[in-house]
Length: 149
Image (cartoon, rainbow, N blue to C red; front, side):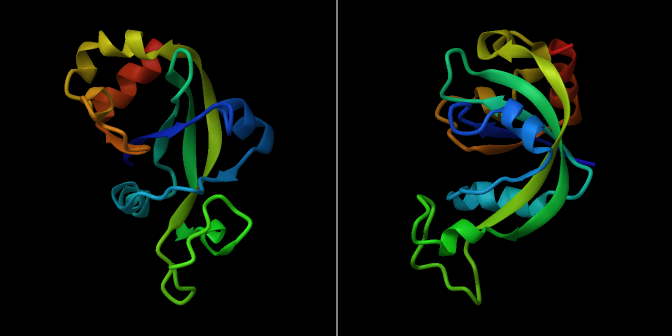
């Protein structure tokens, strides 16, 4: 099992929305590196759901991967903000994974994450890192989860 962090803007889709829907395709990812990481995800992997572009940003919950990478249908939908007219149907560029909520965390603000020793080398805290999908080590995942208990 691997561990991940996936960022979402809570105004668009929050951890509460995921709980309400019970499972959701994580669509709209339009970065090749993030897409490639999603292609590595397997059923059962655990994910920290991180609210970005929020005041304050931070970890909101834990989810589980319940569906592995498959073509993201929004790339073909001309009414979607994620439409990609250059993505061929026979070789789609963009994928989604399906996630389901596992447990809500006591919200852990970014400032609290910054002081956790286990996150000293975490990609989340690296300057200039804007990826919406990141791998976490088991130790990083455990530290975030413990901080949210």
